[in-house]
View 1 (cartoon, helix red, strand yellow):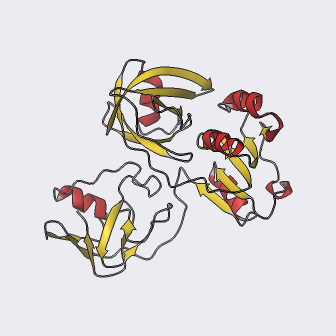
View 2 (cartoon, rainbow, N blue to C red):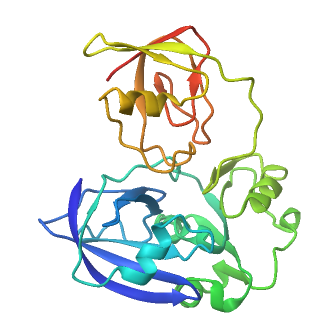
Length: 295
């Protein structure tokens, strides 16, 4: 974990604050557009937030946090209790939403989904690509960074503050990469239209899997064998056995709990798209009777 000092808290929209986290021990670790960090809060919760600052400035990270009316204690704590001067630990940046090289980009953002798009648009424009942003919100006052983006990029930015436009009317070239982050309905609409689509979700996709079954897991470093019952997650079994695994969302969207699989076949239930030889034990289970993990 990296130590930071909360330098600034700024209200950037209704129920949205921007936090600037300055490195407490020198420069922070590098990152690229699309990356996020885990923020360890003083109330023992850990939450994930996209980095929305400048990747070229490693003296500080910038994130934005919307107050969730159904908060489980994370966004409420940020809004009600965090003040400048507080020391906070953050993880190394992780990126499951990378910006791939392309001659043209269309960025689609809904609400707080604008956060990863801010550095993406900056990078795309700096690279000389044709880039545009469609930014949707419930009202102008709920849309963080809207005025800043319009002032910087002009007509490249289209703001819709009374509902989502028909995405099928958005013309893009055959080599355009489309990036979308926002509510599930917006992601579903984009998936039905754009073949070269990259998405990031804040909530897991509603999917149906077969019944959970028990399986065996072997801790590759110690040789310890554990039984994972049908009614318990692999993550909980490892933690209860004294093999703690860092975790955040517990919903398969943040990637905090990624583990290496040495043998066996996982059943992937995450929304990230686990790379070969990896899995996320908060939600994923096993197709084979036995898994060997690098723990």
